Image 1 (cartoon, helix red, strand yellow):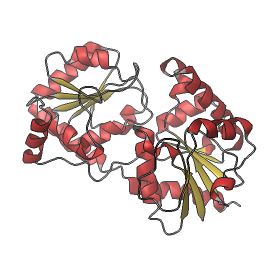
Image 2: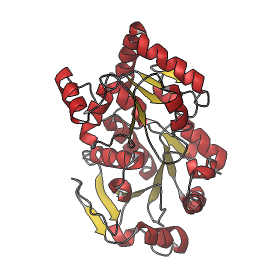
Image 3: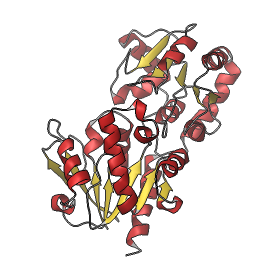
Length: 338
C-alpha cells in the first residue's frame, strides 16, 4: 500500500509538529506501507530522517490557495500515484486516492476569538472540503471527535479516535542530571512548571495568581529548552500546572507523568480523558481551586507519591508505536473497500 503524507508542519514548534514527526517515524517502520512525504516551505529546509521526501521550495500560503481554493491540481502531480493520502491540518489537496486527515482540535472554529481571522477563514474553508471529500478523519481524542461532530456535518462513523503517544525519552532524570540542569538554567531548588503559549487559552494569568506562594517557571516564556532537554525540565519541577481553558489532547500532561512529575490539569475538554484519574482536576476558571490543588500537591507527600505512581502507569498506556499501528489500520480499512 502506497501512502502519501503531508509533513509540511514538521518544521514548526508545537503539538502538530510533534505529532507529525513522531507518527511518520513510526509509520516508516511498517513494512506493509510504502510511504512518500510531501513537504513545502519557502524559507525552512527539512532536516529529518524520513526517506522518500518530495520537497518543494514554495510557501504554504501558495499551496493553501492552490489546494483549498483553486483545487485544480491533485496531490499526485507532486508525489505520484498513491493509494491513501494523509493531509495536514492546513491544506486539503484534491486526490484520486482515499483521503485521511487528522484533527487535533477545532479551536479556530469553536473559539474564533482565540485565533487570527485569516487562520479562522482557512480552517473553515478546509472543513467544508473535508466534509465533502474525506474518507476518514482521525481525531486525537474523544473530546476532539465530539467537538468535530458539533461544528461539522461529519458523521460519527467517519471519525476514528487515535491517541497521540509519549516518546520513550520522556523519563525521570537522575538526581545528578536534575542538579546540573537546574544549575545550567539558574532554576530555583523547588519550582512549579507551567506551559506558555500565545493568547489566553493557556490561562497563564490565573495560574500566576494561584502560584504566588511558590516559584513559578513558565516554559516558552521564562525558559526555552530544546526538545532533548524537555524531560529534564519536567523532572526538575515539583509539579506541572496545566490548567488550560481548552486542549484537543494535552500531551504535556502525559509527558510530565512519564517523568514522574505530579500533574494538576483542567476538568474541561480532553484533559480529564487523557489524565485518566492520574492527575488532580480543577476548574480552570477558578483561581482559588487551582491554588488549593497546588498547595495540596506541594505539601502532601503521600498525595505526591500517589500521583507519581499513577501518572507513570498512565503514561505507559500511550505510545507512538501504538498510534502508528492504529493509523495504519485506518489506511488498510479504506484500501480494502476499493
